[in-house]
Image (cartoon, rainbow, N blue to C red):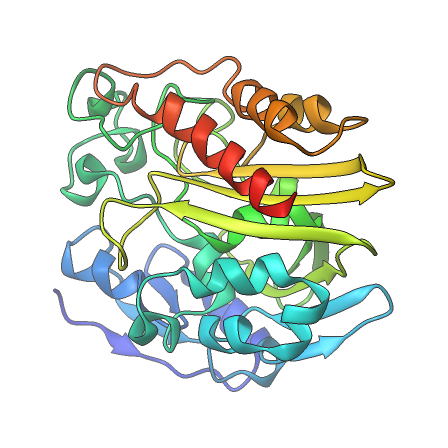
Length: 323
């Protein structure tokens, strides 16, 4: 790890100003659980780190007219353990509780979790791939056990966040600031696929900072769950995950949200699976049909075809747990 300076900003405007002037040499750090790994692996070599977790504008869980406002520097542990989030947006609390280990959740932030970089071993080992400014994806014909089966190409990374699928299922909005200007982006539009831009994973500009998440309360009468399949029981990223939320009235599914993690370069909303459920009873047959529909259009690589039946099974299991 190279030497760097550490400049603690007094305000959000100050932090954004440092990014805007010298974004090629400055790097933000909140919890640091991803940033420190990038520094150790020499993926980034900034001259200055700018910490933002202490900024009051980025902290806390507050009620809003439609649900909750969650500061981007709020710890994942606080989200997983929050009574108000468990009541109003339980799928988000479940997903936050699946991130890493207790130690990581006590350091990592919700903003950092949705903005973390890919875990692809070619990227992490500094191969000259798309993510490093190159013009190839080495996983396409290489070691691709954990890579994308949906929306892959030209890069086949998967988005590593646990909280992002839950936030997409809830229809959250991301608040972004450049210090002097703020904008709001629906979280489903926050993530960028390799087909849109193979160099990055989200819409943030060099001088922009995620400040807050606006999370609507789950619909009245809905049930939700977050299921994550991993190689190890904990401290691992998802082979496949699903955030499922359904509303059932008179024994029939009225509304469904099914969002997959670990299988695409962004949280993948399985619209065909949702369609397979609406108007049906939530039972073995409809859950099976939804699982099959969730992987329509899947294009597995040489070593990750196992993700197709795994995803089908995880979707089915998640839905039957809500039945």
